[in-house]
Image 1 (cartoon, rainbow, N blue to C red):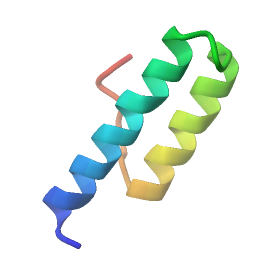
Image 2 (image 1 turned 90 degrees about the vertical axis):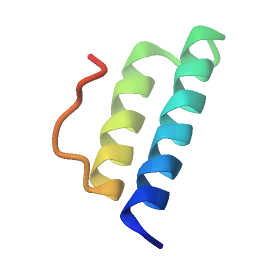
Image 3 (image 1 turned 45 degrees about the vertical axis):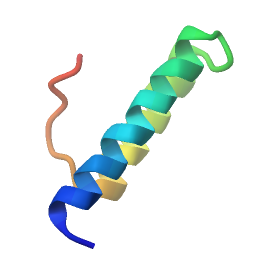
Image 4 (image 1 turned 180 degrees about the horizontal axis):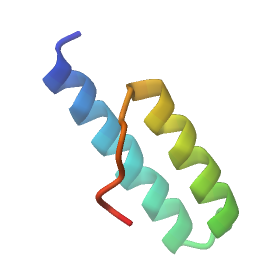
Length: 50
């Protein structure tokens, strides 16, 4: 998988995670923990969305 494809997959998963948070299906703490895991899994070093 290319870097661009991985970045797209990460972006989609992050957007879906945000939807879960805004729909109150997960807590802010769960969102933070899951986002940290996604960042680690995809090798994302910094978070510009905060």
